[in-house]
Image (cartoon, rainbow, N blue to C red; front, side):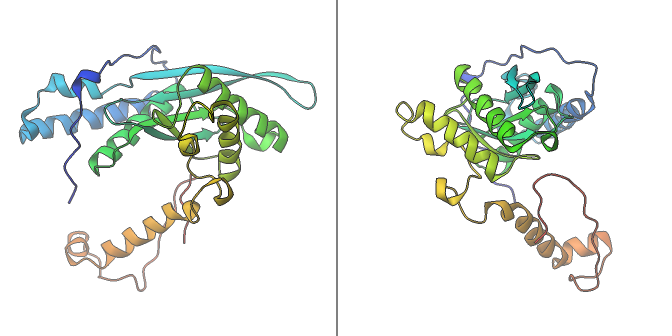
Length: 265
């Protein structure tokens, strides 16, 4: 059973978005909005906290969405301006937390949609994090390790300049295309800039290696959680009866879908 949602401070809500939706690939954001509207209607129908639809509308859009450019000169002297993003859903619970995706197919609508999803997931389980998401629009396979390191460091430097991240405001994490290596580079960049101004600077990044203060087993944790959840469901009589499948995991096969941080254990 889901825990009760945390109590938010409505006085802190200042919903706005400085970026207009483009016609390119808006399906995922529209889908999130549709899910949100259905959830609001259900909560109103059961009189959850006796809140009105106007009150819920404050949660629908991201509070802040930032799109910026990372200038870089590659090792072959080619000059590039790389698109990058960071979105904060709401500031009712802080810090925000969200991964940094490094992939060529990202856009501002996807980032905004994933930030909203992260916020809702944390709220449903009573985890005191707001939702955020970031991205760097490149194919990491086309860049050298040194170039990727410089891009990741420049990404953090820009976010600090725009006052978008701190240990109490927004915490970075890995996502598709980023791992412990990239998180270590971002942590080093933030530490060099803010270690004397942010007393909790070590908390700016999760997913970093143990030498930088990370936790062993983080990379495997998501896939392990999937395995535990599947095992629980398949050994639950109510679940198996509902879908007409025999109880237990013996003799069953699976279909693996997804290209992000889900690791099969």
